[in-house]
Image (tube, rainbow, N blue to C red; front, top):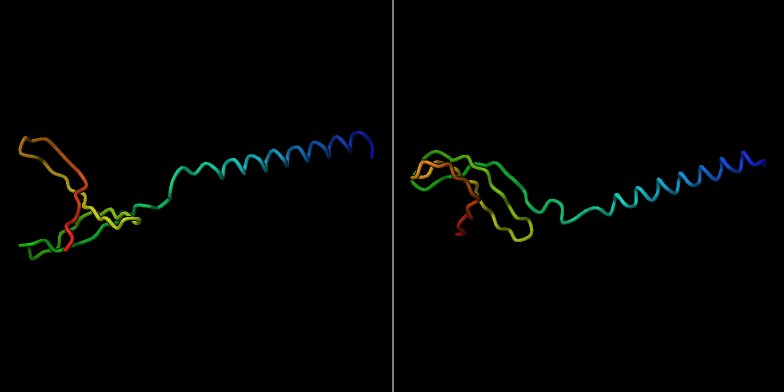
Length: 89
């Protein structure tokens, strides 16, 4: 092998090592559990109503806590929204 061939092989090995390190570092970026919360659109029956209500629910897949997204205009005329826990039976 002449010097040119050796230089090409060394360069190729260096590139492969750099690419391997970059992929390893990218895989270690995760900061927390993925998919802990599930957002679900659904219908449910409200007390005193004959029609189902359509709402958005957030389920914590670790604790099982389910909350419903509520929004509206308050008595003061201001918009408000929040996640409200669902009462267990």
